[in-house]
Length: 331
Image 1 (cartoon, helix red, strand yellow):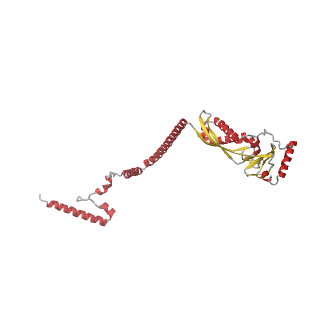
Image 2: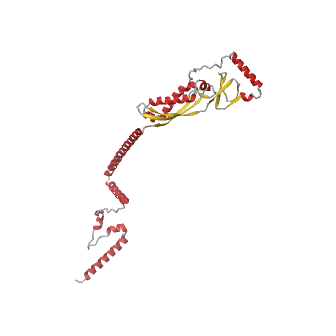
Image 3: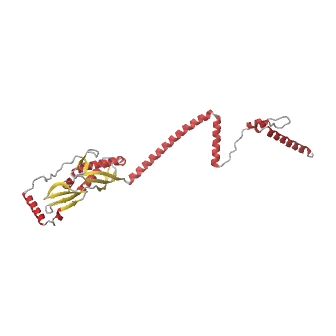
């Protein structure tokens, strides 16, 4: 039965998930009639209480805490199951009681070496959480409840580890904990014990196996990195091919790309690049007029007529002065 199923009240008044209880192999006799000797012993006990009254009151009451339950025995027989919490009356001469703690108990499962299904020796550290739901069963069904529960958990842990491979143990600890918890719970339900959880703390591997697994993991990471790098290069080559197709359709784009590359090289390495300038750009300015002077017609369009005329006059004046100087030199 899982924890999601219908809840039911146990003999301690606690609300716990309903489950099938194990067979009670010790039959209680609280419903049997008292024998003659028991009746006489009870009567004598009452007489002593009345004779010593009110001093006997201090010995006839016991306080049971909220997290405890008391199992009373009268002349060795169980009386009305678990009792408490609160103030409980009993006859000190013939009655005795045993306290049961209902709080969750934590036990560390001793570390032990185990062999997995694939013949790997490991050691497992685990912690057991459990609590008592049936105080009567926990008192009369088992002599040492806590030690017995711990041994059962240790055995179930060994069996579960032996039925799984190392890879399954390392990748499914939660499933292993649930499996062990259910197995221990089935074994301890007849004792009135509910297993909350079996937590796997650590799985210790031999040093040689740890090195081998580390090398394997590193090789897998390197292989994955190479695959990712190859996929990136493939995508980059496809993008470069698409860009080259676009540039092939327009020569200006290819020239701009060339200039961009030169600019980036100059910025990164702090160098000066001398780029050849095509002389065809100056062809309009090579047209000469009569007299051997260059024409200024193209400048008229670029800088305006006034600026071009003044420049032309200055050029002609300078040329005439240079010519006169040459003629005046002695032979």
